[in-house]
Length: 150
Image 1: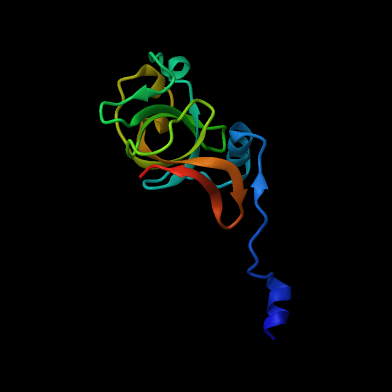
Image 2: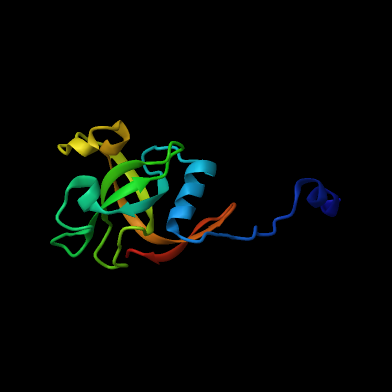
């Protein structure tokens, strides 16, 4: 009987991972095919973008006094994503650069002063970067972590 049910509904075998040529390709896949509902505490894939271009900052990634990093991110959404400003959860973790894929955890929306962050209401969400991700996704498991922030 158990084998009949497995044949009918599938087995519990892990799916084979999907490997992408780079973080941009992985991000585009996420925007097009994965759930990207923006809610408090949601963890969504995001792409690090150059803060100089996106927000007029002095450097692509801004170092923080505590050793963490402040980043401009394009967060996954069905329309291709939205811009946010986010910090890493700690100073202990990977050094991030534009083009890296990361895990961003949403907090709550706040009012922003930067004009670039007021164009889209979703850009008012604060959040934190939890980890650098590999451009590798497994259905039922999610993204593979390259290096977490501790």
